Amino acid sequence: MKEVINLKITAKTDVGKLREINEDSYYVYEDEQEYKLCMLADGMGGYDGGEVASNLSILTAKKYIENNIAKVLNDENIIEVLKGAILEAHNEILIKAERINDLEEMGTTLDICLINNNKLYIAHVGDGRVYMIRDGEIKQITVDHSFVEDLIREGTITREEAENHPKKHMLMKALGGEMNITPDTYIEELKEHDKILMCTDGLSNMLKKDEIFEIIQNNKESAHNELVNMANKKGGRDNITVIVIEN
Image (cartoon, rainbow, N blue to C red; front, side):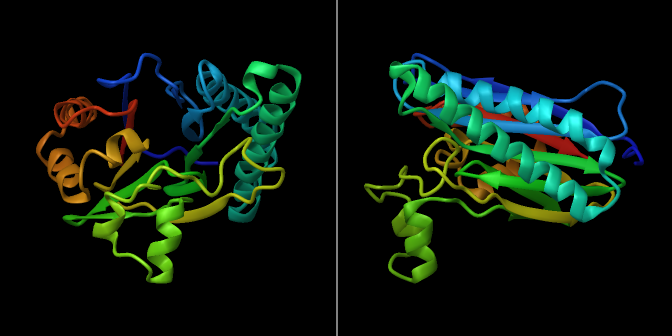
């Protein structure tokens, strides 16, 4: 595997203005390594449950990837490792929830980004988002596993109507939420000056896509801080976590 040259990763998490506990968890691999790994999870499930689920998913996926990445030779194998990491985390959450009554309803979203040889590999479950900023445009790579996103795809509601829908936060897929899950996966070729944004819905529900783009473009050294600050200025209704990856 070949290391991506000049990769810069910045991250920030914040409890927001209304929540008492930060149920988001993230991981950024900063050591010298052939590949770069970033993970982001947004937990749910009552007091302490969300925090436990998101942290457990990160720790389990990290260990799985580290134990299996040496076998990786091509795109297909990398994607299989990332899918395996999510399924392993899902199973660990189910096991822990079954053992501890107070955690029986816990679950979490999980997004994994692995960068190797100037390619971005993504595995995704939930409504955390991965955006690509390239050539003066921002594009959402992942698709939310949410009730309103399904309605949008069906043509039942518009994206504008989804912003205030009463079931906006209802997930259709999450780790721990059902017995069988299939992660979405993506592969993107990276170009010079690309930026990747990973974020929980504490950011994407508070800022529109164009606002996110403008902040990233205008705050090259501190975009992660400014994104969190602006989400809080607009109300900070949920935990906010962002990871900015610059190629």
